[in-house]
Image (cartoon, rainbow, N blue to C red; front, side, top):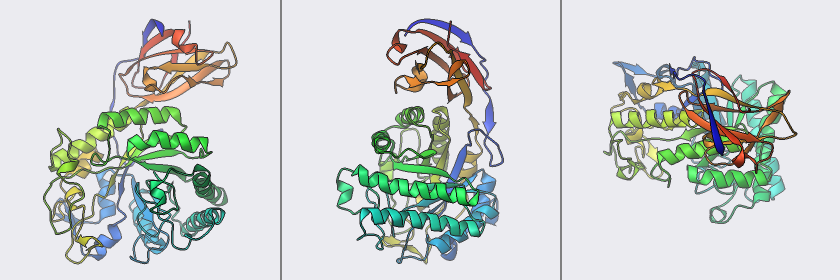
Length: 451
């Protein structure tokens, strides 16, 4: 971009403490996946904070979380948890505590994740069209049943860590995705959520969820080409142990995604160990191989990781962070199919005795610098206009929207950010257009990119 014209909007940045009661536009989600809460209580886990015994939901609400994420399986006959009855119990607890709810459909009878998307046994032998009908019905009927009891979730995940083909098999997890089939299934779930919204007068926001940032951009590019476009949020899992990208690269990925797609972007799963010790015989999933330089396996290191990650997400234009699973403790009576106790107790935000280690409130109530709305506005001299600049993170010129006698492009940027941008009537012409450099102020601003 040739030439630069500089003008400054305002230099001051505002520090704002995020609390569950705070109204932000777009919403800032600070959440916890406590799908194990009912099981932990039934197993005798005891949680303490400030010298008192606490209930998980009110504890996280008072610590600053505003969303509880709850998973649901289709027919998990190997456990009495994460079925519809258990989910109702969880959502009641969340709503009673004043939290929003993100309902996470796994579309499986067991764990669905980045390595496997096993079809529910009742759907396994159905044709793809019939699987799509079954997926629609399960999603629709579950949400209608919840709505009847005043338990409609605020957000809905259509699938969990859906890197591979959903409603599938272990063999298919190793194959390239058949996008004609995958799109049919995804769009069935999306349509079910939208239909329930219309039928009940509610508006659950839809999230699609990919594990690890390096997988997200190719996945959403393929999904868009296949016609999967009607969603509100892109959710990412980020665990350093399983990701090839640094925290800085995660931020760059979030920035590119939110400029490439009409959706908010957030980290819907992350965690960090406060120790590498073990409270039981069940092996820890997050050990020495999960540590990042500068973030020791201590309560302070755990808190620092969460604070820095959340600020990075917000600075990159993202809209929040969720912790998985902050209260999965080791108990004497319960365990998993892989061992007695918990695989995650060293990555909870309570110590081995169930005492709050300070990470939750330190993370959730930290004074974060929030992004502000910035509108780039160009004189309307033709039928199209494009904008490009360093704030786009290299995604290339983006089309602007005509509003009245001008073209506009809206984004969110951190106060104090200096950006350079240019506009032109075609994408190819942006590189030769005169550039403008501006510094973002603490309030919503309009940048006029024109002579």
